[in-house]
Length: 245
View 1 (cartoon, helix red, strand yellow):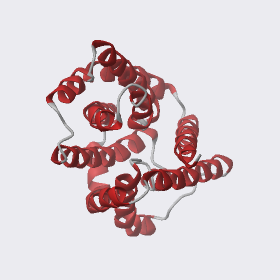
View 2 (cartoon, helix red, strand yellow):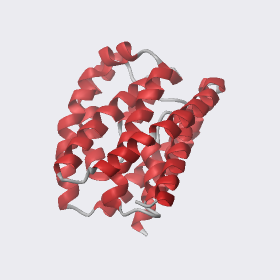
View 3 (spheres, rainbow, N blue to C red):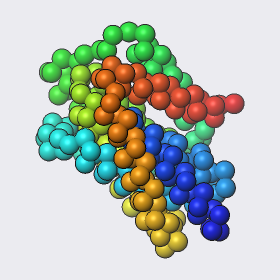
């Protein structure tokens, strides 16, 4: 990586972290396409993992309530891990653009429906029943497509969580998935010391971006925050659906 490439990567990390600070999601979704402009995917994907992990931890510290989220959703988090391992194998054997494009269409349809209707509420008994299948499917989709938000984000939105509780609960899921993905990439020999060094340096612009975005999130009413998350989800879906073209 050249000095110009490293500087560009740090700027990308700041931008992605600022968006993450506002919505609680989307660091990799923003960072990876921008990194791919000047880096090959085999470098861009592992390069984004350490800054992504640091962004997760920072928004989790901002949001608070880590223990409560872990106690409530630990079956979901554990169920995601075998799903992720299976999904990665499916990605290696399948057409990634097809699976990502299909997921993008689902995201656009869901976000469009959710923006036009009142928030769906899942009863408490059904919430407990769905924890394990939602976790497993989230891991499966993540491994096969690289997206960490389906179906865990719609599930969390349907529980009526406050914005900080939503950010905390989803980011625990993102963090566990990213740690397992880092382990898998290391096993494939795709994590070098240069990538680690740039990733560690990226913690500084990530911290600045998270602080800026978190300040914006703190001023948003709950309804506005939900709308912002759904609009971002729709943009994510449109980006993924474009892989069909």
